[in-house]
Image 1: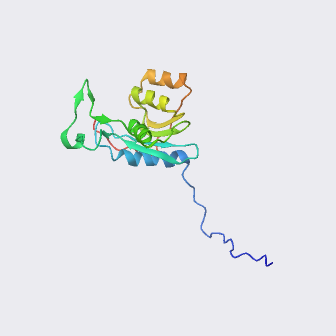
Image 2: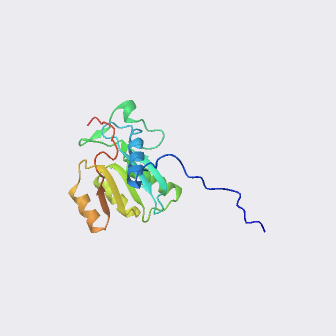
Image 3: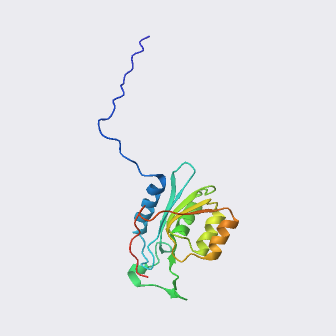
Length: 169
């Protein structure tokens, strides 16, 4: 039997480049997703990743369903200082997984802004174990307490890892 291989390994002549870390990679994707947000009160993007660093869901702030007008088109539907027409990026991710039967247990989320209280509760209930964020926008002290009580890791990534789109609060 001939032991000759049908291939050869050829070393690159280019200098080795530094690849993005997983945190940089996923947060950069979240910031691109934020650009799809249709509510200019907060351009938020989110990416849910499983244990194998595979993307299982993406989301951004926008109106509910495919027939509801977007804030960009008609303006904001306001109540008590909040736009109630907008579904948050985190909930959009969770809802997609629920609709498609994708489990979230032991997954992590990369989101451009610290989750609000309701999103925090939904993330905990869905099985998310880690939350990575850039902007500590309106951090709710009870959301922080719930994360601690439930062993959810919350990590603020360093400024400069990605750039969040400008918003018109």
